[in-house]
Image (cartoon, rainbow, N blue to C red; front, top):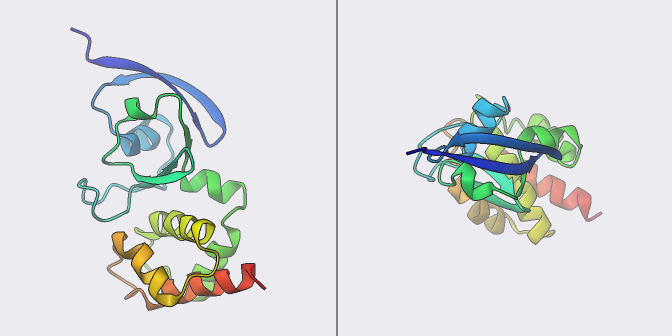
Amino acid sequence: MDQNVDITLKVNGQSVTRRVPARTNLVDFVRYEMELTGSHVGCEHGVCGACTIRVDGQIVRGCLMLAAQADGADVETIEGLSDDGSIADLQQAFHERNAVQCGFCTPGMLLTAEELLQKNPTPSREDIREFISGNYCRCTGYQAIVDAIERVANERNA
């Protein structure tokens, strides 16, 4: 019995067709098939947020979603959002506010921050803390991350 599936999806605007093992999760697909290594594998239980990827405009945990479930979807990784410049202001603010230390959580944190700002352009600091609460950071203590996101929200609304 063949345990592989054919999938066709768009990754960062590029149409992709592959035959993959049915149990391949989405984060492994983008990392190993597409060689887009910005999304990280952390806990593999959907808790840490390191594997955050955008699928059809919504952030998902790439370790919990199978690549086969993304068949026909529009998938965006940190590389795609970085290349198209849509999160350049967030990246700059993270850098300037020292919200990046080891960098392991940063791609997922940036995707999550962008989704927050799309849904709520004027979040309070409490809104920011709550929205990013599913993304773990072991280095910064979150204060700098909240500062960076708040700064971008204020600048986008100025």
